[in-house]
Figure 1 (tube, helix red, strand yellow):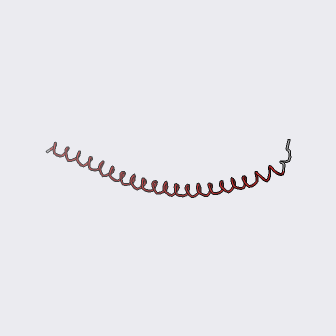
Figure 2 (tube, rainbow, N blue to C red; figure 1 turned 60 degrees about the vertical axis):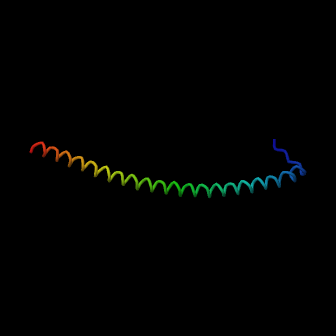
Figure 3 (cartoon, one colour; figure 1 turned 180 degrees about the vertical axis):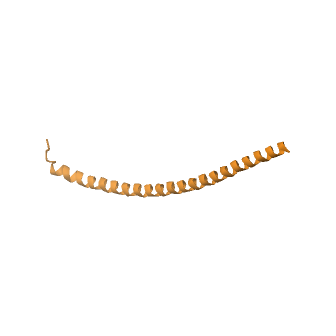
Length: 80
């Protein structure tokens, strides 16, 4: 049921449609820029967290080793 749009209505609507298209393009460009910034920030946070987790893993390993040494010292003192 496609009817032709009357000429006067088309003249009224076409500039507005063009304006909306321009606004959508501008909004899309802004969103793209925002997503790029957000992506880089997420990447930075992931790297920072990765570094912190590695540091914690190293500390936990040292803590475990220290606990084992302390246990051995206690056992040796108990035998003495």
